[in-house]
Length: 379
Image (cartoon, rainbow, N blue to C red):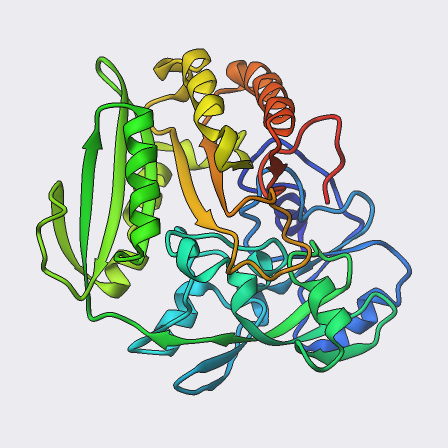
């Protein structure tokens, strides 16, 4: 590995935390991973490094670049088995007409990466998170032993690995549930007058369970906040929901952020610091929390490419023991996604710390994929 590999391993999408490892290893197979674990240094697995708080870095340790392990091993009507280094984009490509029940908004992240965290998407109100839809895993534990596990075979290892942030070992391979994919998606984007109206509409939509994809977005407008509701209607041309509509193939809809990535790479913002903030709020406190957040956050502080995402999800489909959310029937992921200049970064990080404390005071939990509170270590 060269200097560029070490520089990449000491960085991530956040471009905020930089921890230099002693070694970067790109394993070709399980034996390489076991050999790395036997070297006696801390080992961290890394996919494409889309976290923003140094979660896939290892100061003085070993970073395993898992992206070379990206083989699709088996595809059936109801399941697919892939290496941890496969992206969700490659999972979709390998199973035409089928889909995992839950996809993250951005498909260029790895299977192993999101299964180590949880993995939430616009369909999570119906199907839970990505870890709730895993049928089996192959895990190499930190003692160098490989374990094939599932809910019924070595269940302790299985449940410790999912959303375990690597504490149980390295996820090597996963068998994922598949369901039929729609041929097309009618994407509705509705403008809501207030945050309260947007939240009320989201509650109604997930309670009715008529639409597979439901996501709220808040962006900066010319005269203040714009409250948007994005709804994906699968295999339906019903226009009763209204709003701005676009018909897309399922793959186009699932990979809709690809154009945005290309734009941000072109402008250079992709390489700027991203002090992203993620927490789960109980339904009983989220409206008050959002009102205070938006009262204190200015459109200028959010920035032209920044946004706030809100996902309401039922907790009944959540079965991953290590995926921690408030204990109410409905919880909300609130994600504050901002791009900073170096001059803005210190204030944004302090701002994030304040709102993490406020979220916890409101009965929330931190989703530790973003830029973590500075007083807390990475998971």
